[in-house]
Length: 221
Ligand code: HEM
Image (tube, rainbow, N blue to C red):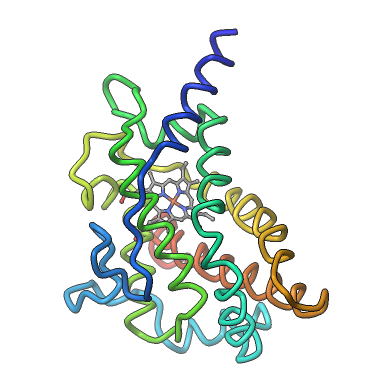
């Protein structure tokens, strides 16, 4: 019973979050979203390694184009997409934990809200990226923001300091499968919607591979 009340409470906090996502790509005006910053650390993953990663999962120009088409369908639904993802996190105390104060274990609504705005911007950026060095560098920054080397810094919060590796990989499933019904709302053929879904799946996998870099011991990535 206590658990159910907690879950309902959590969901209401999460769905109540306000968002300040900017309409275009780059994220100006989204606090902490630094995709265009010139002072980012250079990604430890080289262009050659990144090209081979793309090749490994058959990610190519058709996927980049499909993602651009997907953005047209997803952009007007961004708030609903985030409601879905945050609803899922809120219903799972073991995930909401990572947004909580490290001492009191209370969910930090402001932290959730700020991350939500960056998450929204990320959808727009992932679907319009050109996957260049700047993009690669920001993936390394996002990687660090999930790991103890950089979590909590962008929002200057006293939250749990590290997201466990296992959930980084496991999250690929919810972040991909939940996008299907949103893509299905577009005025496109089933074949086109499938291509967009596959492109989204590949782009998320690529991102998460890059985001796990800080978790892997030197020389093993
Ligand atoms: C497929 C895996 C994941 C995706 C696509 C994803 C996506 C994102 C994005 C786009 C951001 C904002 C990045 C930025 O600052 O620009 C973010 C930050 C964050 N994510 Fe994730 N995430 C994933 C895994 C997880 C997991 C498993 C958790 C734990 C519940 C989590 C919790 C957080 C938190 C707490 C932040 C804020 C980090 C900070 O302090 O800056 N994420 N995530």
